[in-house]
Length: 464
Image (cartoon, rainbow, N blue to C red; front, side, top):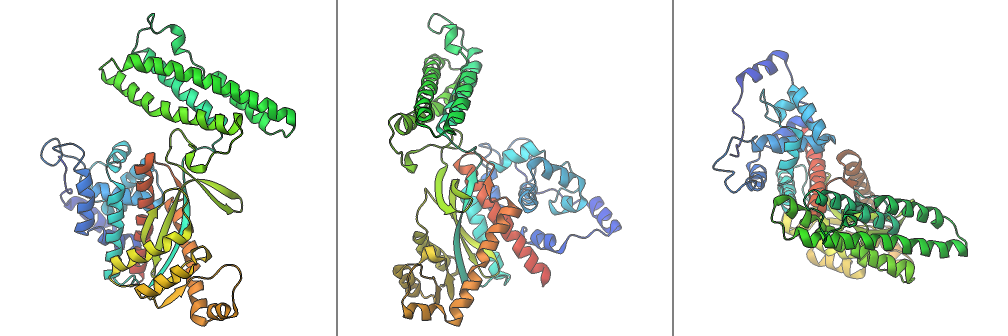
């Protein structure tokens, strides 16, 4: 049964008073912020879906309050789940913050399971509530808005056609090995049906990598032949998997059905890898980015080309941020594909008006957001100072406009959004998502933004 909180422990508080322990002012401010009932109920609603009768029956769970605060600690300090458990268990201050007192600390594996129940949409609503609290506490007034985008990478290796084909053979061979324990080899399924081709595929992929580093005509011809061999190996593994899948589907046991689900997940992805390899390498056609799959395990990954020095192509999702005065990220959006930046200006302004009930006095973006339509829209909704520098050639009138003192001040203010993104990546792990799937990506980004905002608000309140 889902519990709200632990009963207050007088013995724990006696130790705190005896040792004269005090929370860091920033952590104490975050502690008060997390006492908000709306934030608490947002998380409780998701955790209550653990089982059909989680709220009515069953043994007592770890309280919602403890789970929420431990997850906050994890992202505030950049801990892993195991590190979070260890630090909370060993620190009286963190036990106090997490409301654990002298009770046993939640195991890291169970903390992870609870965290998976929280939906990305819940975290988005959580962040909006945090922004509202920041407004009520006068940390921000919502008068200035600056927007920018960044790429959050998914946790994948650098993709190549050969490595994806080898991954496919490895996954299928591993699954067939497990299926062999469930299905008895018969005349229908010969022993060769369970053959492990992963070593052969791995060696072929390595030879392809060696040949690809050469630039001669002979090397290009050899590369094509090697790819055809690897494609043939992958198709053979696919054929084996499809035969085993047919037999497993007739087995109603839980173990067999788990293998069926796994094969049904990976077979279409591996077929897509084969198709794009044939188109690109064998037929010599270019494959559009939206038609490519760059990971068997994170198929939602987008190919983002931004022409940045040292990292011209990134693999993950573009995330668009809106930051208001006070350093609070009031909105974030995970974008599909690689849409142009100038399309994000209007949604950012609309969300700001909806959230704060009025337009910002000043709104800024970088050169990629400039367009006459974007400037006109900002003025239409009531923005007094629109800071969108025009790229390329500028008329004398435009140059004079951008040399005005208020425009220059706005440009200097806008530069701070790059620093905010840097802090989110370095301190709160926004740079690379370590969770799996689209929901996992949304949770990872959401907690990074929330942790960043809690830290900013806590620091601001600690100074007052």
